Image (cartoon, rainbow, N blue to C red; front, top):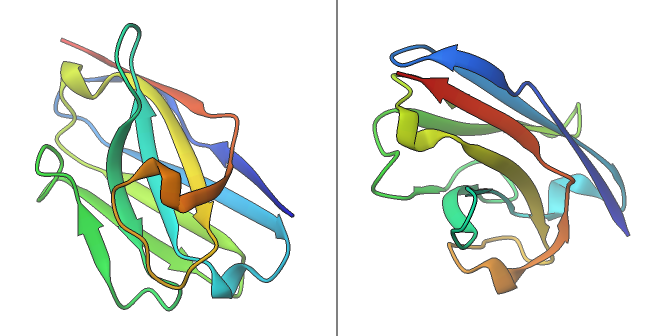
Length: 124
């Protein structure tokens, strides 16, 4: 079992930055690929970014490529999502997810554990 707790969400103006954190506890964190997803009202959950168990491989949705960076610190059991040049369309609840594999991509079904989410609101 893995428990995930997100933090760092909030209200920011368009063009601003935020850094989300996801603290993991439970089974060995360093063996899990991790991902970030987001969901806005009336829309399906959307893939944002993923990172392999070692941090050596990352994968981004086209909509955030070049603006968001996913990283992890296995010593702290934490994964981060640094978001720059935020846009109103980035407004959503952001979820952290843990996979049972070393590498995972954009399909939500690859992820076994989910956090409760943190709200990000970008004002225009």
